[in-house]
Image (cartoon, rainbow, N blue to C red; front, side, top):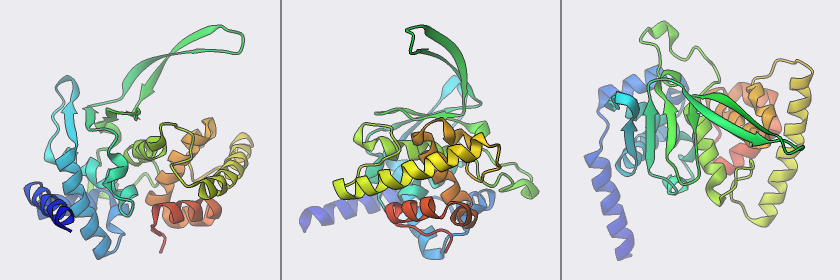
Length: 258
């Protein structure tokens, strides 16, 4: 009981020290309308969780990029949404968040089945690595200053995408299967494998999909883009991908479509 009281006191102190001003919080909700769709109680919990997130994570601006309060709160609000009911402990595996002004070009190499090594450049708006740091490009996150543009892109969300990878990798493996008990894990695999195969077939056939076609690259990417759609366009996600919606709703303990 004493330890629990001490933890609560420390958390409350952290929330107070990193309290988000009302004006900044309301601006964040205005710029990212899918956040504002949540209930008043959920938003109160999210705001508190954001303060704890800001107290425990360290932001670094790369190449002179300035991490303002606006930047940090925008990232925190979107990053905390997937763990609103799971808790911040799901992000305990890393501390650093590196913010770039724009996309980063990373040199990649891989060896094909014939033993030939290939190298190529990949442009990244974000990247999550086990143990961190997590990298994000602000130009892929920033909302327009024109209110008419707020929330215009209905699904794409690099912050939620990369933090979905963090959740997935909590057990040390990026495989589209977050840490679960043995029975729950097998159920998850049965559902996500079937849904991914169906999704890949639709992408290969040239069908339009709510979920980003990038999800056809690998099941772990399918998981990440599905989590994006789950939060940013929940009603459309439930309509188009009901099995994936229910799978995520059960795991994340949230039902954003209502």
